[in-house]
Amino acid sequence: MLMTDPKLKLEICYLLSGSMAIVSFALLYQSRMAATINTFAVHALLLGLVVALQADIQAEHNLYLTAAIAVLFKAIAIPLALHFIIRKFDLHRTIEMVVSPGLTMTAGLGLVVVAVMVMRPVTVHSDALVTADLIFAMVVLLLGILMMITRRNAITQVVGFMSLENGLILAMAGVHGMPLVVEISVALTVLVACIVFGMFFFRIRERFSSLDIRHLESDGRVSQ
Amino acid sequence: MAIISESLVQLLQVLLVIGIAPGLTGLIRWVKARLQRRRGPPLLQAYYDLARLSRKEVVMAEHASWLFRSVPYLAFTSVWTAAALVPTFSTSLLFGPAADLIALVALLGSARFVLALGSLDIGTSFGGMGASREMMIASLAEPAMLMVVFTVSIFAGTTFLPAAAEVVRNHHAIIHVSMLLIVITMVIVALAENARIPVDNPATHLELTMVHEAMVLEYSGWYLALIEATASIKLVLYLSLFSCLFLPWGMASANSTAVEVLAGIGIWIGKLGLGGILLAVFETCIAKMRLFRLTDLIGGGFLLGLLSVILMYVFGNI
Image 1 (cartoon, rainbow over the protein chains, first blue to last red):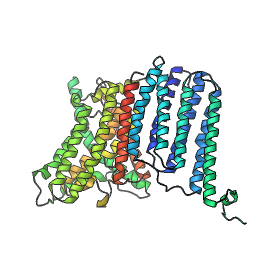
Image 2 (cartoon, helix red, strand yellow):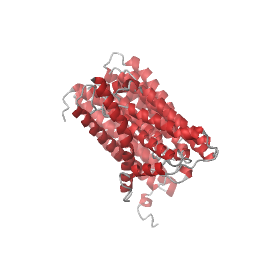
Image 3 (cartoon, rainbow over the protein chains, first blue to last red):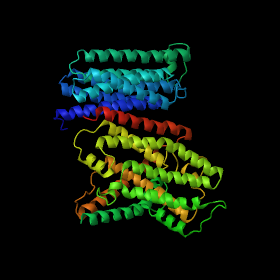
Image 4 (cartoon, rainbow over the protein chains, first blue to last red):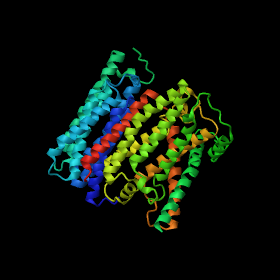
């Protein structure tokens, strides 16, 4: 790839951050759980690309690790785990949204205006593209919070929480020279993994009245 | 000399638009049939249909008035005029100064208005239902289209369509996020306005699922031929508008030679064909939506358009 022009790399970062904001809106619109999880996988993939690009721009090679975590865990492993949960515990048909997608997206639009008005005075002395990156990170964060409060099911609320984290990591990667980015992203990933495990155990306990994992084996029969 | 070349190009566009439109419809039907493992009608079937309909006798309801009889002509001329103004293979048209984006939206809106009036004229409740469904979709799709117009106008600094196409073509800097959003909005609006799946099934025989056909169910013979031609030209218009705003490369300009104009025509026909095939694949991949979920879809498109206008204000000077 002819990626030698730094301005071009910043512009592609801007484009990818904007795409993350668009995918956050798409996350708000989804009404089916499998589609929500797949959209989140795309969200995490875009985050991995942005962080890898920022690692290249800032010559901060630790960020490649953050990008790898975003892609491996959040784009592949956690969506697979969530798909397994909703298939095994038959959660496809639960009622999802508190209000209609249209109203949610209108609230999201208001949050975009809030994000712009908050981040504009903070970044007034920065380059226009860095400002854009930070504004989109704020948008992703606020839309993640909105998704958490407009959903009824715990799994989609966890997806909202993870998209909020993606916004945080996007902001951390967009600000040049922030320390401990990789450590913070690892800590957040461990937190999310604990939440997913917690939901998993809760469901097993609720369905089978015990945490014995023999109940999950494919034939489903447990010889007492 | 420039006047002669501009008027020749304009005349060519006026004739080509009406000549190509049934072919595009035939191509889309053929591709959809092949994707569904059927042989499908021949590619020129739409032309044969129009010829057959124009030979048939018109059967009208007893209480139809002058409005019912004039609606096909009004709708056809509005849409044909709008299609003749969109720069398809050349940005220098004789009537180019009239090609304002908002005027185009108004022309298409007036075509829909007279169609709805014509369906109400007979007095059947089915025509009223079709008109109300179409107006519900239009009340959401037209603001979304205007958001597209506003974004493009802020970006290009003008609502004049040939100039906007030139600005997009000569723009060698960054692609804005607003343009990505606008592409999504434009696709949703185009699907809604042309009565395509997921908004409306153009091949349906069930009155329960009709939206556009419910408005035109009473027409027959030559009037029906005009209305079907109107729908075909509208599809060509939307595909040409999409390619003019987002893929304007290959168009001839004011001082191009005849060879460049012919190449522009070839490229335009290629873009139409590609757009038709993609539309057919898309329609085969998804199902028609419930009517009451359409507000979510088209309203979502409108909100994305509004978001892109906001972002274009915020990031316009990058």
